[in-house]
Image 1 (cartoon, rainbow, N blue to C red):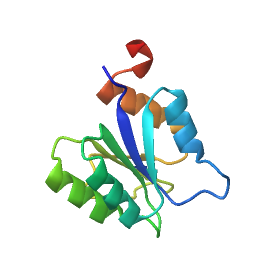
Image 2 (cartoon, rainbow, N blue to C red; image 1 turned 45 degrees about the vertical axis):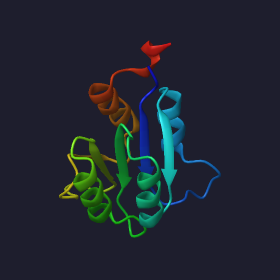
Image 3 (tube, rainbow, N blue to C red; image 1 turned 120 degrees about the vertical axis):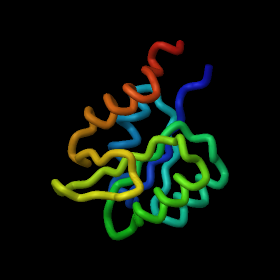
Image 4 (cartoon, one colour; image 1 turned 180 degrees about the vertical axis):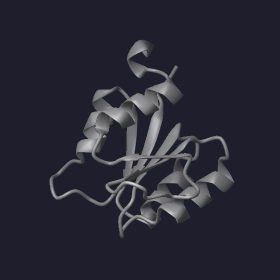
Length: 120
C-alpha cells in the first residue's frame, strides 16, 4: 500500500525547503508542494488522487479558490486550512488549524489517513 500523498499550497519559503514539508515527510507522508494558487490548482489537475490538501492562508494562496475547486472535483478529499491568526476561516475547508503547530497538523493527518510509519 502506498504512503498517503498530501498536496501543500504555501508561499515559497525564504529558506530552500519548507519546514512544513520536512515535518510531513519526516512523518512518512509523501508531499507535493505548490507555491501559488495557480500552481496548487495545476498540481491537483496532475495529481487528482491526493490523500489530503493543506493550504497556508496568506496573500499568495487563495484558500477559497483552491478548496472550492478541489471540493467540486474530489468531494471526499480532506481539505485543511492553516492560519497564523486565531479565528481565520476558509469556508470550503473541512478544518482550520494553526500554522504555528506542526505537531497538530501531523496528528490530524494521521487521524484521517493512518500512520504511514506502519506501512513499512
